[in-house]
Length: 238
Image (cartoon, helix red, strand yellow):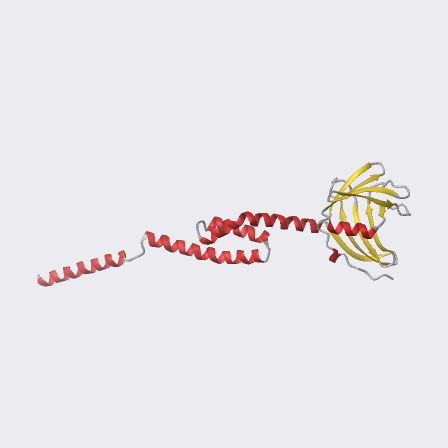
C-alpha cells in the first residue's frame, strides 16, 4: 500500500508540473503585444522605403506606398508619421503629375530638311480641342531661326502681307507681326522670332488669335510651361 501511495503521489506531482508548464505559455496580452511589435517593425521597414522615395522626389510612387502603410499598420508610429505627411505629399504628387503632363506636350526632333538640318520644338494647341494647329520653333542650318504655326489638314490661315496677331503671354498682351510663306503651305510665320522665344520661355500659357480660312477668328491656347530649351538642340549655321 505504501508503494501504491508513493506512485499516486508521483502522478499527482507530474500532473501539477504539466499544468504549470502549460500555464507558462504566452498570455493573450503577450501575444497581442508581440503582434503589435511585429507590425510596428514591418511598418518601420516599409517607411524606410517610403522615406527614400520622398527624398528622391518620386512622389507618385511614394503616395500609394504611404497609403498602404497607413491602411495596413494603423496606429503604428510609422503610420502616424506618414499620415501627417499625406496632405503635402498628395499636393506634391499632383503638381509633379501636371509637370510631367506639360513636358510631354512638347515634341523635339532633329532631322534633315531642304538641303540642311533642322531642330524643332513643337506643341499642339490644347484649346479648342479640334484646332489642329501646332506651334513650331525651328532652327535650320541654312535658314536660321523660325517661329510659326502649322495647320495641316485645314485650308490654312487668312493673312495678307504682314498681319497682326493679338497674343497674350500669361495674360500680358502683345501684338505679333506675321506673314504667310510662299508655296501655299498652311503656315503662319512670325517676325521678331528671338523676342517671341524669349517671352515663351518665361510663360505658362500662350493665347494667339488668328484668322483661318473657312473658320474665321480662332483663339488658340497653348500650355507652354513644359518647354525645355535644353532639349531644343542648337545647330551650327552653314
